[in-house]
Length: 294
Image (cartoon, rainbow, N blue to C red; front, side, top):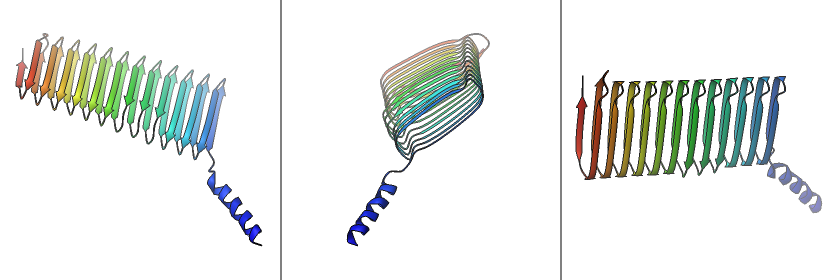
């Protein structure tokens, strides 16, 4: 009798000790391709492809990872690789020949890629825990690249229009970044090395360029460019530096260098004629305010 009880207990443990993975694939159209590989427990994959010639690959290695892929249109391609536990991947592509690529290596990471239009490209690479990434691209031939290594980083890219480019690199912990680009041919590059840095870039118009480089801790950069052909270059090296650049009009050029601690820079450029501003702060507790109007 005791032997029978032990056998029943073993069977019960086996039933609950190995939780199953779940995969759902729904393809409507012609020549669609889907590959799902799950190794671990409680992983969930949901794939819907509506159209022709779409490709999708999901690889999950770990416990309780989630991946949702929706592709509507023709010739779209999506790849999601999740290594670790409790990661979430969401890819939604509507249109033609869009490409989304994601690799998450760690725990509790979250990624959202949403692309509408033609030949948009999004690539996200993460190493660490609790990193969050969102990419929204609406238009044609937009490009977004993200690299996050560390913990608790947050990144958002929103591009509406054509031929916009966003490049984001976050190396460290607790960094935050936002890039908004609405128009044609805008280029936004953000590099954060350190901890607790914050960068916001907004470009509204055509052919604007903004570079933000933060190397240190708790630096803050804010750039708004509203017009065409504006250029902003912000470099912050040190701790707790603050830079804000506002450009309204066309052809303005701003350069800010902060090397030290507790420096403050505010640049405002307005008008249809391009202004030029160059601010260099080397040391601590420096303050600068530049205003250029027509």
